[in-house]
Amino acid sequence: MEALSGGLKAIGLSCSYDGKPVFRNLNFSVRPGEAVVVIGPSGSGKTTLAYCLTGIIPNRVKAEVEGRVVADGADVLSSSLRENVKRVGIILQNYEVQIFGLTVEEDLAFGLENLGLGEEEVERRIEWALDNFGLREYRSRHVHELSGGLRQRLAIASAIVTAPRYLVMDDPMMNLDWRGVIKLREIIRRLKSEGRGLVITARRLKGLEPVADKIVWLDGNGRRALAAFRPMEPQDLERKSLNDSKIAVSFENVWFRYSKARDYVLRDITLSLESGRCIALMGPNGSGKTTLAKLVNGLHKPSRGRVRVLGMDTGRFTAAQLARYVAFVFQDPDKHLVGDTVWDEVTFGPRNLGLGFDHAERALEVMGLGDRRDDPPQSLSMGEKIRLSIASALATNPEILILDEPTTGQDEETLEAIAGVVSRRKALGKTVLIIPHDSDYA
Image (cartoon, rainbow, N blue to C red; front, side):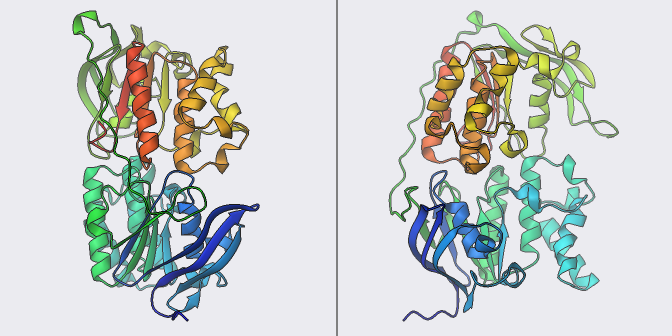
């Protein structure tokens, strides 16, 4: 009989929702100082596994579970969350719900103070987190002023400073740019050298190869599978002649800062985007990429200068009026889901704009969600929610499509679908502004 002490172990672990299997008979272990990477497509059960390993299932999320999860001899599934949190920490896929402080420093201190640590130890750990996660310059910054990538980095730092022996990281690379991924790998190496065991879920292995000691694949059909990834074929996208192009978006000496802020986020930006082109907007987290995109769809107005969309001065139109021409797919889909079903969600825009549903039907099929139209959006995995957001944007057939980090956490099949969307929009003479966190995708 296998010894139960030492390590975090899944032993004959199966999980189902309402009788529908998510995975069956999983057996793997992570020893102190190891990192196990769990790979699988959207909806394959990676988050469900993370919940089982930390006791969120069955304590907070109800599911049918068989088998055992053991952390250093303690049965996780039969223990309370209060007991489990001392052994196994978690960084949730929806990291926003783990941020409690108003400022970066307050959020880092929150968990430490709840552990009853002394003032000196709290300060020491905060200083460590600020340095090791590149957050020092944001120490006093309000959390809502941070970019999505920086907020995720803060959530990871806040979980790590509490120092559980095992840490489950559910899609930790979501919203991280290449600098963030490198920093994350450095942290993983340090945690391993300190004797901590990690389980890391991801849709792709890329970026985690140097730190992975073991790899578990989930095939999305309730089974553990061992399989190779299908490589993406590069898209052969034909460039349009500039002489044949019309200007879709123009910035004329644009400056922007948030209300009550002293510093400008964007300074003296002048640019033109031609119709029928795909433009990738690159830069580190916090550099103002999303802010610039929100100037295009009218959610922000320039502090100085002028933004024109299809010849229209955005300062004279509301974001709602511009929605007929510009569709924006945001980083965090949970904040923008409004429909009771997938079909309600994807037809929300056309219904409000008085359009037909032909493009909505096609968009669901293109994004691989045709069989989910009657499901509630909140039942989808994070990757599926992002695909639903893209389908909802395509449903209005906009002239300009803005994709803010659409490749975040997506599997290879979905990346191919997104690349196909970009290619088709270009062929139709539409404009795509994409903000990728993965420079290879750009």
